[in-house]
Length: 424
Image 1 (cartoon, rainbow, N blue to C red):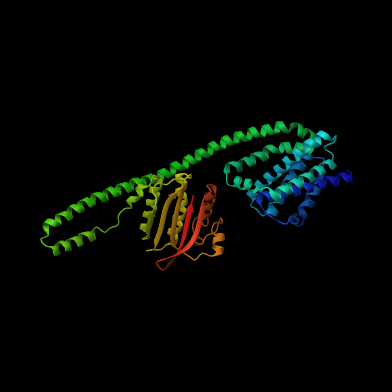
Image 2 (cartoon, rainbow, N blue to C red; image 1 turned 60 degrees about the horizontal axis):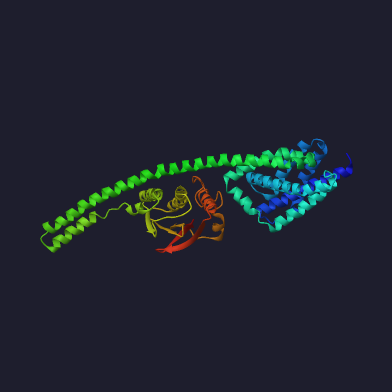
């Protein structure tokens, strides 16, 4: 093989690698020192070049091996998880390929030999400049964050890679043929993506409906139990009031009447079921709050409700709301002990749901605030079930619906409380 051609091919591959890495950093919104690429990956570069030299005549094999090597490089330099590195690889590789194709179209029109390595190096240099501009000035990280937050689009990424393999191999073998087939391949991939979106959306809707039904099956019986308990209490109080009225007839003087009233009123001072929970327009929430009230009562933990608005309006589905406040409730009850008091506030303003819960807790530190919403972090003991998952999922769900969460300390009755407040 001609040494000049070999060097040009290696140079092409190296420039393409830097292009893909720069685009990956742009999606991450990460300002790494780009020289770190050369320093940390020299061994993988060497391996790629050896494979290139050995299998140069097998373009398909070389393309597949080089793609795998680029994926490994992205995995190492970004320090992202395996799944996130894969999404970055697909996004970055496809983005670089699209830019290269757009540049290759005028090259193919004006030049006689667009497959010439010199022209390909020139095209890659132009692509490198565009990639650097994107890295510096275009906020493409929003696209990456959106894909990570949506299962549908993550699945589409897998489809795009699989469907693009044929075209990428063709592009590496013969640029002219690739440009001719580019419109057909684009239409084909678009149709497949549309079919995938329709299919996956249907599956996601079915899963959502299943979650809603499961939530209603869990909490509607609780509402019926609350209604039954309130009716029984009402019937009992009707009887008690009748008995109190009879005291006016049976007691002959003020002292005896006062003594009987004190005795009977004391017997009436048993806990009432929180019937006000039935006033919410969201009955699923009513059932959930009552189940949490019963759980806290069984552990001798007091709940203090401050309901400012019973008509809750928000874009968040009702079953998702119960999941959000359920995470905060579980954490508050786990952090409380017998005879502790938990303070709750519920409100709805401008189509936003506001929920606040305060329980006895630790003093907040900057380290605590920076770690508390990380996956796997927990201030509980190591044996806690689903340790460190709850607040991570809470934050992830709030981000999906553009919600906010606030964490603060308060002193209530000479005791340190930690308060979590969400708006969504």
